[in-house]
Amino acid sequence: MTPTPVLVTPRTLMEVLGPVDAQLMLDYYLDNRAYLQPWEPQRNEEFFSLSHWQQVLTENQVLWESGAGLKFSALSPDRSEVIATCNFSNIVRGVFQACHLGYSIAEKYQGQGIMTEVLRAGIDHVFEDMGLHRIMANYQPENTRSAALLERLGFQQEGIAHSYLKIGGQWRDHVLTSLINPAHA
Image 1 (cartoon, rainbow, N blue to C red):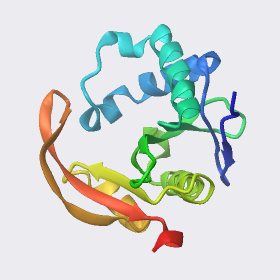
Image 2 (image 1 turned 135 degrees about the vertical axis):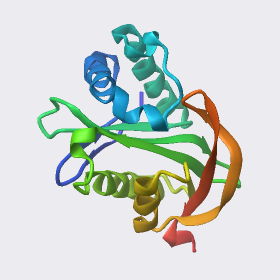
Image 3 (image 1 turned 120 degrees about the horizontal axis):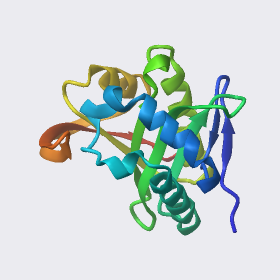
Image 4 (image 1 turned 60 degrees about the vertical axis):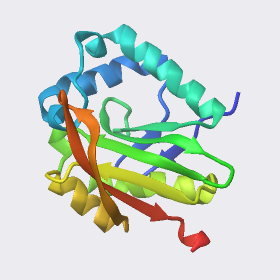
């Protein structure tokens, strides 16, 4: 079994959590349920259960093993809480060498620069250690915080995808952005 990466940032410890850490993820989503709701798909009650998170975290380790995904949780240095998530999904190798980026941060940590710190560490890992060429990230046009974050990280806007994802029970437009590995430019 390939060990999952562990990244250390000035204020977090980034890991691919296993099923033994399911309570940490459940607490994160319970604590931030209302805050994250406008930006995420509709969640049924099963999503907010310990058994669900045990299964998801088991699947995340399988995704890592297969090379199809890397789903980090950014933890407090003492591992007592999840501060943010940083997910590189749909990893495709071959001629594409790309993935999609998804992320979220706990409401109480918003506006402190932690999401920038976490994403920079994750992006560096994906580009430098995994050798990917392109990271794609998409956001709803009204999500000005995500727009500013991605711009700060160097993502370039590529267009608008109409009716792109079903968020909060409605099909929503998304701004499409990408970041190219500077070593490949």
